[in-house]
Length: 404
Image (tube, rainbow, N blue to C red; front, side, top):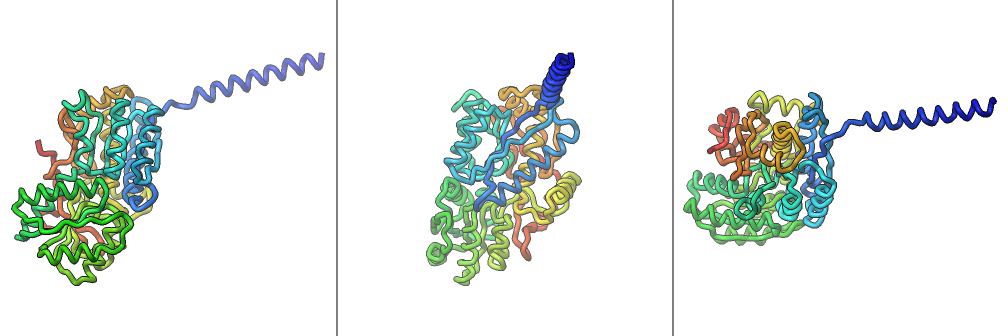
């Protein structure tokens, strides 16, 4: 009888444990999985990490109020290493694992290798950093019936437009271009040629450099000898600092302008005094401004203990992009990719973000949230990015709504 009683007790305990395990597993709340693809190692790491921190901060805020439609957001983060093949592999993995959407993409080449997977899987991709103009245009109708690629960053064409306008503003008429050998550099050079012509500026020289190059003296000397009154640089890695130092060593004192990447700490710290005066377009400058901007900066510093964000634009665009994606999922009331895409194209709730106030940032025919009027010109002053002009500083504190 004692043995029988023991067996019954053991069986009851086992059943109890089994039921407890089932209940425990059932109690684990279902999450909404959002992919994050970005370079968290290598030369593009400052942009990738800043973007990821902005996304994480947004998700922390969203989950603190209960998540979306009763579910918490879970980020599935993958390092694309700024490499085309790795980026394509990450896109394949995330789409096959059925993430609800993905946010990220820093490098244009990675973006070009990734967008096809999201489009085929009908999973929305919100590009938070990469400016390659074609990324949001490739699948735009009539090329495809529906386009699942969105962006909360300026296009490269917008950057080229404001850069050439700034050169014309200084009454300069001859410019040289220096571009890296990536897809981003190719696009920057092509856009510069087109926008220079529109602005009445002559392109007198065009040079290229490879990732990892440390001496661009020959290209700079060629630009100088061609009579360039300003130089525009397209690149995103540590090569930018080398160019600034090479230019200083030549004692060639002409304005140096470039893409938004000049605002990264890697350029500012790497170039040192040689980077002083460099000019670049910005959606976001790390200075106090609107209440939403101030709130973002304070929260970022509190969460990540960084008084100087390595790439402020990347952080702000990642933050705003994640909040817009959240609002779309909330509006759609489903995790279906087509419904989320349609919600992004017709967001009903205005969102006051770190960069601007978003009122219908996307439409069925326009998947780029940033327009030219939202850009200001930044300038390296005493080792940090400041507003290049007083009127830009004034505009930076105002709501710069999307141009219709």
